[in-house]
Length: 538
Image (cartoon, rainbow, N blue to C red; front, side, top):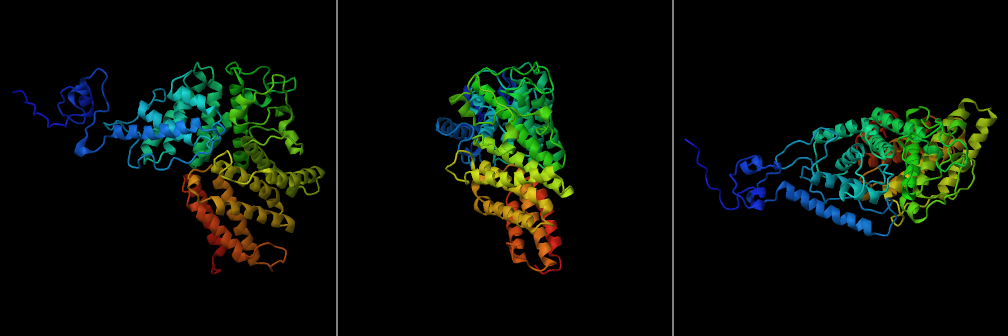
């Protein structure tokens, strides 16, 4: 005997059937009409107990995010470096972003896009914070192609890496399984990115690798981070991005011609994207290879890889003031390290310069330590000993009134002082002047931490910060050990109780930013401090 259907109570139909004004059988998790629909509604949901459905939650979130995005787009600040407050509580903390109404998982294939609602939320999350994660493309053009479907759609590699970051930057508590699915999708599509028939596939592949590299470093997966940054470095060299606007005869480095897959820029904005791509990669490569103790993948001090590409600008400047058609440039980094003024003071240029100084200071300090009588080592040290303080003095103090977000300003200023530490640290045990210099530079970083490290705008930090704060804390801990076994010197700036207190202040702020790399670095500092204070009663 056929089963008789029980009439549903008023208001008990699923949201789709109510919208379509058809009879609903009330079956769960998916009713008959939704299951048999030609469009196969996967978001069959029931509004139980006068609550709101998952889709309604997501749609509400999108409305708030789009209002924020319109506010950003209509603001007068510089594109891509605008002052933005972090997305705070606009994403409801209990909403599972990456599940649809019937709790189906995300598509596992990196070549199948996400549901539109999820796609829009993740992209919005990413755009709100894209400045500090290494995004160098024109933000408004990216928004138009992804959210408004104007122009050529991005490659799957670029889309999927922005989804990874959008998930990370969400305040929703999504599961590790969901995060792993997004990362897997990004890796799949990145591996095949150069096989796509897309006019901007090289530029977008570099962007995807930068985003993946930063993500893996933040996650404490340094081997994977290095892999992706190295891939990006290899491609910018092969594509000749270090020779953009070169005044020399050799425009393409190791290749007689650029890669066939690199489309020439069609306008000043696309040229700006290529320039900024190069400097973004060089910045990451210089810093992280120094941390790993390995040679740079972009050996910019070698004559065969001379950098002629002009310093980067914020993206809006390329549109407002395009480079003159006849403008040519050469020896960009050589001139900077030689102390030649270049008037390149954009935030992006400052970040790149700070990373270069960090790398060169590390190499030069160690070189002089190993060969103190070398005239070249002495000269290189003397040049940097003057250049680094001058560069630090040229930086604007961190201020909310400045164009870049606070966390972007923080990494620039912190990295510059870290370069000062790296230059003098190898000599600190032999030279009292270098010992004082490292302590004062570490104190300058601590002052930045005390002033800015606890602010809500610092919710998301560049993974480089975890390394530099570890270095800072270690300077104070090592000094406490020295002071324990030697007579206090009148010309030292701090006492043992002071440097121990300094190290604990650094640790406190590290502990307040528990992303995976910071957690690993905090454990290292904690162990060093415990060892330094064992048996001392401090």
